[in-house]
Image (cartoon, rainbow, N blue to C red):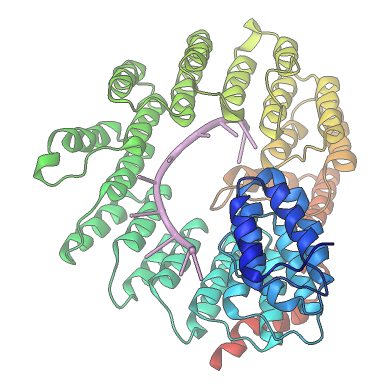
Length: 523
DNA sequence: TTAGGGTTAG
């Protein structure tokens, strides 16, 4: 008959078996029970062991069930939810632990840091609905949100495209820190409103380098090179020394504005004058400069740069190879791109979905010289797992040659594989709507409507940031065509996304719903 | 525990 272990014994046993999560869990389940509950720090230690071994995550539910069978599970659940290992666990598990804790009638409300960790985990998985409900639960439980809590909320609102509400939350915050300013500034930049971000920056008690770089990058993405340069001047006036991030943003902006030689001058200064206080080029600098050359069609310059990168150890990442591959493909050198693909594999750099998509798109655009069916065959050969980008390239190729049957087939396959079309996919389809073979295109489009467009998926904006010019112009073009316009409007109604289920509640209700983020902040 | 530069398709 086994005797109850003392707390120290159990902990020592767990320590000894820290490398074998299954054994540690078995010991824990075997040696503790309702009659002989473990000490919460033992639970905490076991949890850390399990969290450190992703393969043992399947065991977590049994641990949770065991804890719930104890006379007072709350300190154990709290130990689990307070653990620094929480971010490494599946969000679903953390949530069930949290919900179990909240369902215990006698348990005190979880402290704010527990909410903060969960909020952050929800944010990292873009579960804005969850951020919203956790935040409401926090208020309901009587816990007090702190700066961190509100910063996470700010980030979630910005990421959900609700910058105006984020602004209101920001304005109502009783205490802000540098992160609050940085998060809101980034939100504005990602919404294509860098001038508003500049306002946030200037409202800081003291400007800091990170927020400056955030706003600078915003201007750079918007192509506002002059604003960007003015900001750099202002930084220097304030005694802030531009760092490598600042320089990279400038180089990127100049490249995007087509001023590649200006960008290259800065790049050269960084290479040659770093003793004089300029930051040395880093991986990003090389990557950005490489794309700059490629996009400007300066393939020879790019080739020289690639050699420098090879010698300096800057051609080791799949992202860098992808830039060079994309440059070769864009400049019509698909053959050399295929060679490079072999080289990277030889060098031990694993190609990713971007890599294959670049090659596939390059092959698709080879024109009449290349049969799209052959590309499709390559895609299905098992070398790669096609995703929405791959399918969109194929679709584009088939639509371009007016092959609506093949386009339909691709759409069908996407639906079958559960691959959701995005704004690029729809734009390809929409574009073919007003080409010559209108009715065939319409059929393709109807197929897409019935098979590929579950509600809440298609945003008439780009995936990344700012306005989507393609989607917008397609929109306007379609609004001038009667029957197809109706179809598109039907779609836009179905696919509007946003924070939670906004589409189903009245504006008034939504307003009341939003007020919760602002009103409590007076306390 | 939260903010910055950078890979694919329209």
